[in-house]
Length: 467
Ligand code: FAD
Ligand code: NAI
Image (cartoon, rainbow, N blue to C red):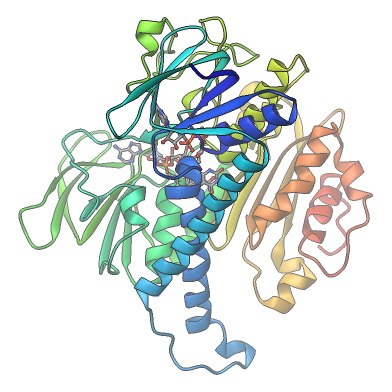
């Protein structure tokens, strides 16, 4: 029987990063993966394929609509969807091979098959060939990630009624796409298909898009998306989809109840969140406790209710983000090696990779109000940023929230081009407990979009220069 210091179930960004860090710290490590390829949701059907399609569709849109005003004359771009899907697949393959390489480089054993916890120190792996093996290990980390949440009565066939997975692989551009849920997936994948020619309607249960993000940012984002051509039906829910006709017919009702209306669409994308994935893991039999939302319950050191069994990533509480899973993987491996691994949950950035992008870190204005914290706001629009003006990409703003007494930065929210890159100086600042004054006095290169971040910090003290 093979024996290890650590066996990790799942090779998404949580699992494979945990494996690499544990190997660096001298542990003998194996990973167990049920899918044919390593990398989990993120690399195979999540972050990476969606970003490849967002990039390619943005280039398509730019070539069709933005080149002429810069004096670049090209004939109308034609879409070759199979080639675009091939571009996406090459990106996936490159990253998946990268994880294979990291496993070899760090002498981590890869065991293909479905893992099941047999209790402290034992994992059973069932291969596709029907054979099972049991491996012995000092520690087990559960990193099995998450799965799509389903809507009762609406069956996902991944052809006409799709989840994010099907929406990443449609074989033709639907003339109309109905999206259920105005969260991150709906707005990112809605952007992809809208740019490629689909008429997009988003039905959202709440009275706003992107719940959890700063309200002012979400409002501006909705306006920009509407200008691009998105249609939103807020405060509404899809209660059923009739698949009998050539086009789908969805019943949409007010969230509070009332008369239903019918919306026709070629494709319906259901993206109403994700749920922890624990199927077949044997957690109940092993005595591993779950919380009231089916997530593996852990303490501050990622330990479950059973000795020697730990859990990280989407399968535990917290934002379902790849970088959160990675950081937990590192911290968990360090704790197992006797070090002081730690994740600062107050400084985890979030990014929506649309055009413009939306990014944030720390508290929103609504959260500060609710907590009764006195704060000051510094805001700076990209219309006043020189680089944005010359590039003619001036949508959006930077908003900084600082403690009214101490000036410590509590939250940063950006909507604008490259917002996903701009957010990281705020993350570093917040990790060091920095103030708006610290940011305002840091020299920023000119001309950059980052100057808008500095100006927003200056605006906290009511002394922005270019506004
Ligand atoms: P996962 O990546 O889900 O990996 C879990 C792995 O465990 C899988 O490979 C699975 O096959 C395996 N597994 C499960 N059970 C077993 C078992 N019993 N035995 C063996 N193996 C098992 N996050 C971001 O931060 N940025 C983004 O841009 C982003 N874009 C996304 C786009 C889409 C369309 C989706 C769906 C998600 C996106 N996410 C994004 C979220 C991100 O993918 C997840 O937060 C991340 O993958 C979680 O990592 P994980 O390691 O916890 O789990
Ligand atoms: P989400 O939680 O972001 O959004 C789901 C939306 O659906 C919410 O606005 C919710 O109010 C709405 N909703 C729920 N039930 C509904 C119903 N019956 N009818 C209408 N609307 C309903 O979930 P999403 O977009 O599915 O993404 C899942 C996870 O994947 C997210 O937690 C996110 O963190 C992660 N992800 C991250 C990305 C990124 O970081 N760029 C990109 C894509 C996904």
